[in-house]
Amino acid sequence: MAETPGIMTANEHIAAVYREVAKHLSVRPRFYHVGRSSTSGTIKRKLREHRVKRLWYISRLPRLSDESWVELRNLGNIDRRYIFFVSRSYPLEAIGEGMHAAGADNPTKVLFKPESEEVPLLRRLLSILPAGQKEAILDAFWVGDTLEVINPSLARLRIPVEKLAGLRGKTRERLHRFEIDESGSYIHWPDPDVYYDWEHLTWALDPSLELRTPGRSREFYKRYGTAVRRLREAHGLNQGDIHGLGERQVRRIEEGESRLMVNSLRKLAAAHGLSQADYVSELNKAWQPD
Image 1: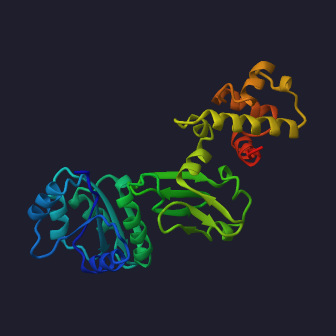
Image 2: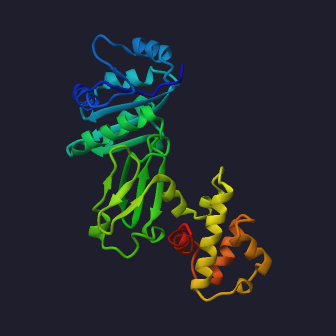
C-alpha cells in the first residue's frame, strides 16, 4: 500500500470548508476531524493503519483550544505541517505560545494566512496532495521586491524581481496582480502575460540548474546548441571570439556534441556582455525548432 498524505483539523469551520471543496474532487487526501469522539489516540491508530507519514494540520485562530494544542503534541513523531488562518484580532504572542505547545517550533513548517484565503488555498492543497506534486505552487506573495513562493511541503523559494526576466521593470501594481493555478502548476501574471512554474523559478535563482537537470536527451543539447549559435550570430560574434573557450569547444557545444557546463555558460554570457541569468533568458527565446 502506498503512503497517503493526511489532513487534520479540530475546527468545525475548516472541516466544513474541506467537505465543500472535496465534493468537486475525484481523488482527495485522507481527512481526520478531531472532535469529542476522536481523541489523539484514535487518530494515531488511524494514521498508522493508513500509512500516513506526513500530516497537514489546518485550523483557524483563535478558535483552537488549549486542549487541541496538547492533542497535536500527543500525535508523536509523525512529520507535520501547519497551516493557520488568522483573524485580524488574534494576538501575535498567543500564536507563538500555541505553536510551542503543539510542538510546532520549526517556522519552516508553518504557514499563516488570513481567513479570507481559506477556500482558494485549501482547494489548491487538496488538488496537489493526491497527485504527489512536490514541486507544485501552494502559495505566493511579494515581500518588498522579492517573490516568496511556497510548495506543499512549505519549502520556500525567495526570488528577487531582478532575477525574473519577464517581470523586471514592471510596476508594483502589475507585479502584485497575479493568479496561482488551481492545481498549483504555475503562477500567471496577466499583464505582461508571463507564466512561471516551480522549476522555472528555481532556474531563475540559479540558471545553471537548467543545464544540470538529470535525464536530458541528446536532442535537448542539440536544440540548446542551436540556440547558442543563433544568439552568438545575433551578437555578431565568431566561434573564436569567446574568451576562455576554444573555437572547437564552442563548435561542439553548438552542434550538441558537448554539454554546456556551468563554467562555459559563464564565459559565453560574458562574451555577449550579459549576466548569466539574462544570457539563459535570451537562450530560451532563441530555442526554437529549425
